[in-house]
Length: 296
Image: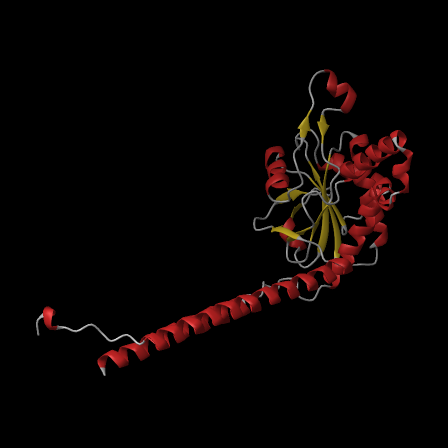
């Protein structure tokens, strides 16, 4: 048979219209179902946030080894299965660590009977100049139990890089010239990071930065001094006590995370997957029916 003798397949306008309508219904219905599931998921998340669930901003996939205050090697993966709080310190500058030690001692006291809780301080100084012996002195002064609270020293460049890239704590500032007399040689953020039992970082990047909390309190006092009416606003009480708000939130998150049942729960993609499968199956079935009609 020549190509010129072939007749075009007869179109069925009703069948085409029916197929288009069903596809539109499937897409609208499927989209609505996905949106509803998303809204339900967001509501559930908000409830969990109120209870203490915290955002996850990453997971520690690379280990880090260092020397603890007893002179023995430790690595952070040894803490898997425990919830731990980590912060940077400058052992040779006691004033630089006041806020971090205040908060860590508060947590150490609060969770003294919780075996699943641990504290870690990372020294950002050259271990050849400020080694584990100095860390042992500092640990002794704050009353740190090595079974519950590590002070770690390692290569300066490596430990700072791990803090910035993995723990997302921030940068170390090195002062020069006259600034050394004013601020000390090194400046580290007064930030604590929560790491859960699955090595996931809990909390937004800026969470538990007590330098930020202090600055918010200072700015609020300055604004109220200019305009006393601002003190009547409900949020002013929160801003004036941001340090306490951070402290309360931190304990709430730790308590929740310690008892969290599904620490590695994956997002729910089932609904979207089922909708896509339904549409694809419908298209395949319609294609088979069309082929049978043409061949028949």
